[in-house]
Length: 119
Image (cartoon, rainbow, N blue to C red; front, side, top):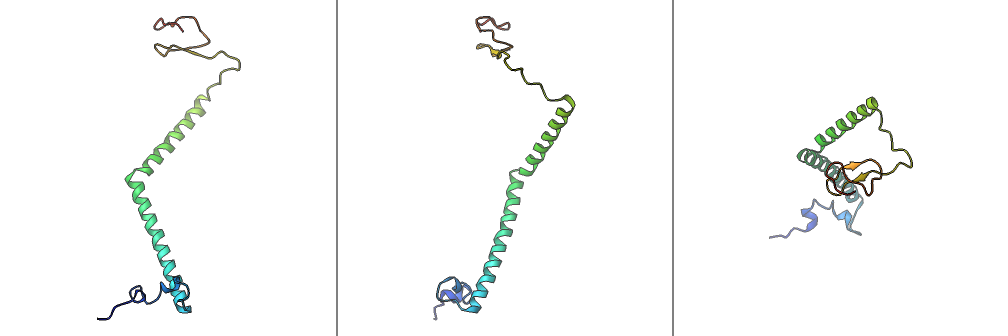
């Protein structure tokens, strides 16, 4: 029984062009064509797998929802206007350590209206 070499198994030398010193002109052209076909096939496989992953993880639906939220927030800002920023030099708000109520201004040493804890 005759043993087959790797050149015979791999298509008669198309891959031999990749080994230095063994390539002929025809083999080089075959290798370039094979490389382009393999590259194109890998790219198509990538696109199919990407679409499957996006479908499985619902990426496209999430993206659509995020765009809808962005558009609705933009419409709200256009109607209501942007909230005014706190004036410069205004005292910071005080947060109650017990109930987490926020009181406007610096109320250190006073008591919370909600729970009576010292601020």
